[in-house]
Amino acid sequence: MHFAEALPLQSGASIRAYDLAYETYGTLNADKSNAVLICHALNASHHVAGVYLDEAGRVKDKSEGWWSTMIGPGKPVDTNQFFVIGVNNLGSCFGSTGPMQINPDSHEIYGADFPVVTVQDWVSAQARLLDALGIETLAAVMGGSLGGMQALAWTLQYPERVRHAVVVASAPNLTAENIAFNEVARRAIVTDPDFHGGHFYRHDVLPKRGLRIARMIGHITYLSDDVMNEKFGRQLQGGADIKFSTQEVEFEIESYLRYQGDKFAEYFDANTYLLITRALDYFDPASTSGGDLSRALTKASASFLLVSFTTDWRFAPARSREIVKALLDNQRDVSYAEIDAPHGHDAFLLDDPRYLGVVRSYFKSKVAV
Image 1 (cartoon, rainbow, N blue to C red):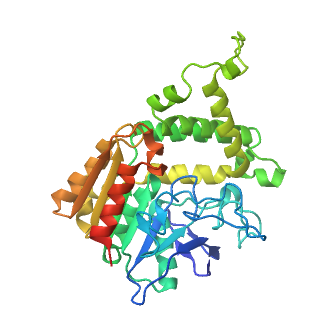
Image 2 (image 1 turned 60 degrees about the vertical axis):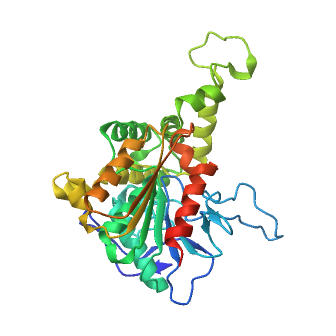
Image 3 (image 1 turned 90 degrees about the vertical axis):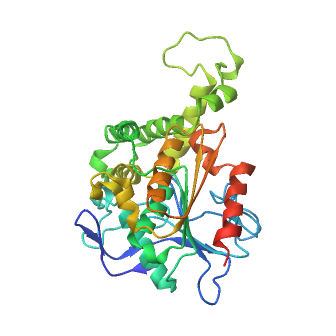
């Protein structure tokens, strides 16, 4: 969907003539009361469920939506009942206007000139999309990780438009350690000789080395120590003998991380990575209330479901419990589930029957329209 009118951004800048890519699943009911907005995490997109078909009607390879375990006919967020909307955020590289597109003012690729966007800016853009679709109130807004931050922001920016918020594996802000991880990943990108100050498109190169390292750093933090040990342990690559080399791949975990980094560098945009990780850093709704999260959440009127995972050390359960406490301080309706799962932060994307059961139960008993 194209938007000609400029969108004011939190930084004081604005962006005009932009597009938002989105997908919908299910059918919007007559009174438009069954809409569920799905907010995506760092490297995901608007394609949250289902598969794509080629011209011959065959399923395209690796085209499954990133939350297909959660969303679809008969699934926890049942598209037989709900009208689900997935939106690609501004600044992304998967269809919405971002650094890879043309700046309508300069008629050149945005590159590093794309304005800094925040979680609040994404929510404002999503609200405009819903306005265009004629949807005044959401049955629910839902997201995991960075998507959970967007869901929380929705309840503060547009409290009258949200009946339920489902916040999974998220936090009210990033810890210093999390900001540090993001900064190391960003430095890997900006110090890549092929980065060219963010205008690498003009030089017909890509800062793949920096992206590879950034992804490797991130991937380590998404997994738990238990999963890494169970999956790889100290196994040598290919069962070979030790090479006594400081530069060659020795261990299977090294090979796995390099594979993940190589794959990521082929499809993700470096400027997008910088933008999205910085939006993560900036998110802190309590900052306008002197750091008092309870006071910040007085604006929220929605009912909440929060879910965390015991081995998620990047967005630890204690961070979800901070949100739960702040909501209870305001006497809001809150449900909370802490899932004992070994998978680390990535657990919110996986097929854990207890986790999916919690969400299914909440949507059936609370969100049902």
